[in-house]
Length: 265
Image 1 (cartoon, rainbow, N blue to C red):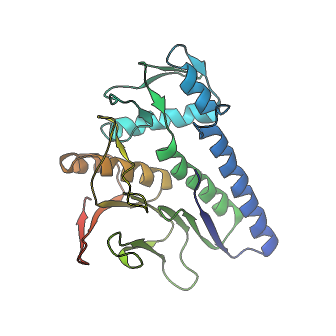
Image 2: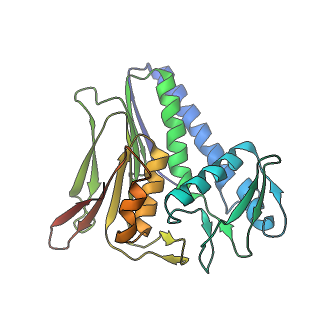
C-alpha cells in the first residue's frame, strides 16, 4: 500500500501496546504481499498473468476479497471496480467458482488492481485487532485518507479529524468527528494528480472536488468515496441509497479561499 500508518492507543501498557502494533504491522505486510500486483510472485500477480486464458485457483482470503469486490461493483453501479481495462469494464469482469475457489476473467485485457480495496480492508482488520486488545480508545490513520476510531478521545466526545484544504495547504476544509466510526477521503493526490479511474471508460476522472465518506466500516467508506468520486452527480444519490448508515460530502476548495460543501446523503 506504500502508506504512512499511525496507531494511537490508550488504556494499554507499553508492552501490550507494542504487541498490538507489531501484530498490526504483520497483518498489513501480509496483505501487501497478497494484493501487490507488481510483485510477480504475489497471488494477485499470478492471477493477472493467467486468468484470461484459464481458471486459476486462489486462496481463501483473495477469493473472499473478490466476492466482496463484485458485491460492491454491483451496489455502486459499476463505479467501484478492482478490474481495469483500457476499453473500460461494462460487465462482470470475472467469474468465481465457489466450489474450487477458481477465478476466470471474462475478457482479454482485464487486470485486477486491489489498491482501492486493500487500504480499507486492512484498516478494518487492524480496527478489529485493536478492539480485541482491550484498548480504551484508539485512532488509526492510514495515510490521512483513511482514518478510523475506537471509542472517543480520552478528553472529549469524539476524535476530531481534519481534511486539508487542497487550494490552501496547511488549512482545513472540513472536520470529521469520529466515535467508533471510520472515514475515507477520495480526490487528487497530494501532488495534485488525478489517479482514480472510471471503470466504465478506463480513463482517469478529472474533477477537482473531494469526497468524504463517514460510517461504521473503513472498507465500505473507502469503496464509497472512490465510487462517488468516479460517478457523475446524477448517479450519486442512487448509489448512496444502497449504503444505509453512511454519510457522504462533496468538498470543493476554491483558490480564493472559499470552501463549498454538498451533502450527498
